[in-house]
Image 1 (cartoon, rainbow, N blue to C red):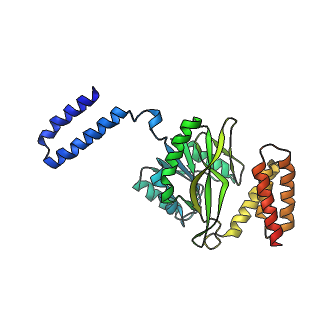
Image 2 (image 1 turned 60 degrees about the horizontal axis):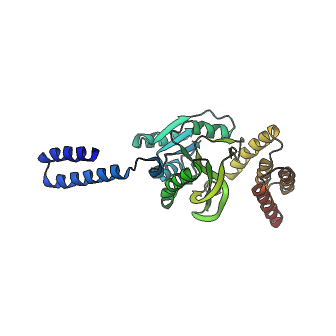
Image 3 (image 1 turned 90 degrees about the vertical axis):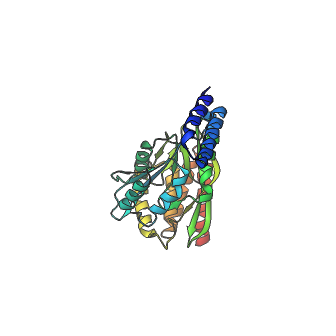
Amino acid sequence: MLNDVIVETCKVSLLWIDSYAVKMHQQIVLLLSKIIDKQLCRKDMIFMGISAALIVKNEERCISRCILSVLPAVDEVIVVDTGSTDNTIEIVSKLALESNKVKLFHFEWIDDFSAARNFSLSLVSNDWAFVIDADELLPKEEHFKLRKYTKMLDDTYDGKVALYIVSDSITNGEISHSHELAYIRLFPSCLRFKDRIHETLDIPDGFHVTTCDVHIHHDGYDASVVDQVQKRNRNLILLYRNLVDDPNNARLWMQLGRELIGTDNEKALGCLDMASSIAVSSEDNDLILQWIEDTRKAIIAAV
């Protein structure tokens, strides 16, 4: 028996170890025997590997915070820089020296968030991907949930499932509101994103999409820390370009309407009307239609 060989080998080695070390060694042998006896190396007894995937650019304000928040919960952190000119690369490089989990790569920005995200996903070495942005963090109390869900869902759906997480928007250090169906962030790493801006996961037939109680904190829309005008202008440019290529994309018309709130409410409502007309003629658009209606109510209430 393998256990007997291990125990006998350890007995020989213990002859020259002091009494305290003997006690510790015996505990190690006992633990090893239990692991072998219970066959914890079977597929149904292990946690599937998880890779965090980030795309970043000029994120010196928050990149360290993000990486350190997710590091204990995953097996590796893939960081893809898309052209930083601040200290982002130096910060990530330092973290990579401190932990072999952190890996830095570079991608030439081509005005396409999906292209950058898909490049990051092509670099992961685990079965599951957890996508997080630099202006987000994973609270400590959420760490164990990533392992819990990947194991449970791999057993239940054979890995053909993707999860919405809960995004808690942070304003002035406090949670202002939460989005339960805004982002799919935990999924098999074989999947890929689509759309230049406000990218979404391309879900194949046969996959399940469900919710979970994993929370992330996001302060990227806090005007006190992020230039919202610059962010909105970038988003508008990419939305217009994407809609030229894909004019029947109801979700992007809805996002365009949301971006125009406050600057051109009349045009925003027109975009929402366009989104509604397209979504009604398509299948599986209940969530988009609800977002359109909520956005329309918000615009009308603000007028």
